[in-house]
Each structure stands twice: as C-alpha cells, then as structure tokens.
Length: 136
Image: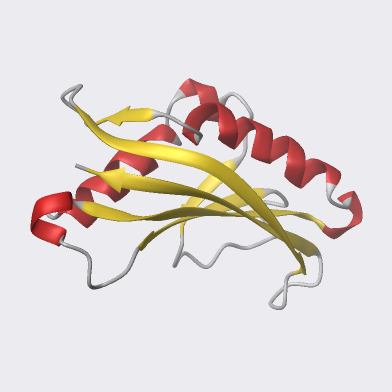
C-alpha cells in the first residue's frame, strides 16, 4: 500500500470513530459531490502531499490534511469554529495509528481559513481547517 493511501486510510478512519460520529456531521472524500439538500452541514476530507522534491524514500510523506467545513450560510462563522474545535480534538498534535495499532502519522498545529459562501451552492458557507502531517 502506498504511503499516500495509508495516510488517507488513517485519517478517514478517524471520521468513523465515536469522537466524530457523536456530533452527527457527515464526512465525505474530497471528490464526492455532496448535496446540501441532503446534508446542510458536512465536511470533505483531503490529503495534500507537500513538495514533490522531498526525500520520499527516507523521510516518508509530508503534507497537509485539509478538512473543508460546510455549514448553512445563515449560521455565520460560529458553527465552523465549533466544528474546528471538534477537529482539533481528533487531529491536532496527534500520533495516529494504523489499523494494527502501529503509530504511523504525526500531526502538527491546526489553522483555519474562512472561504465564504460556497461558489457551487449559495446556501453553504465554507471554511478550511488545515493541519500538517508527517507519515513515517
């Protein structure tokens, strides 16, 4: 399995655990065409590798985990920051394990960016939550 695929599996698995699911926020892969008429509040998960010229064989994979947060436009930024707090709990400054319990991924400090009204759906507001990672 590639380092990218393993990283994606480790991160996506977090969104199936109770620390996330108890909040009833649906999580989709980044290329999934979500429908706001079905889910008015959801996130999209994206793994973006760092520089293509890193020493991939020696240092592993480095990059960013980007979680696109979508909330109803009329909620303003408040709800996106509440969701970011939940994301911090499961993603920020963590040593994440694969399915065998082996620590394979470390994450850094998070950052948040308010993107505004979604260009594809005027009823959704988008914010991006970002945390760096290193895959060993």
